[in-house]
Image (cartoon, rainbow, N blue to C red; front, side, top):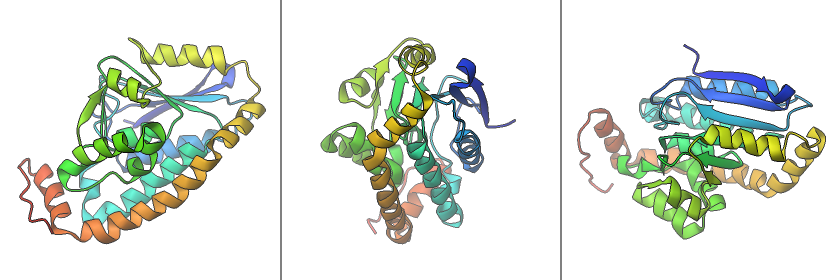
Length: 254
């Protein structure tokens, strides 16, 4: 089964992307490739004024593949995920994300690369990587753009999850709605569909220019930190192996 469904809506003005591997919708190599491929395929559409990314099943995503974080695959996994994040940040039309249930780890990193998140009341957001002895590279770059620096560090260091209402208060979520997909579609139809696609592309480039430059440089920086320093530690490898073995990690602080 394909990990992603994509189609054009609103007379070609809206690209629909739907994560299609419930209930976890794991952001693994296949999902990353499908998302990136869809953005590349539609990025030159001259009529496009927006993208809506949503999901099948009760949860947006449980996060990235932990198996692909192990040393043998880690470098390739980070390179492909970060290329996707850059493609989303660089996309010539705003990306709206609709979230129900869990939106964690690599799933939240993908959501953060969009422009707005519409969330159901049951949505939960978190970066639990620190519980596995690692950190969230893309979220380390993107979260401070959404929320203030201290709160970004709270989520990144603690690994805790927050509900939709708190996420909205902190600016992580644009709006909470019982049906986030319908709310996102309504926002698009009211505010973007009637605009010039050429003007939307220029406005997106203007509004996101600093973010685009920062994401490119900082992602390269944190990726090297992750691969060269973090993955050289005993505890990062212990945390991943312990998670896969369904046991509590034994930290040695080295």
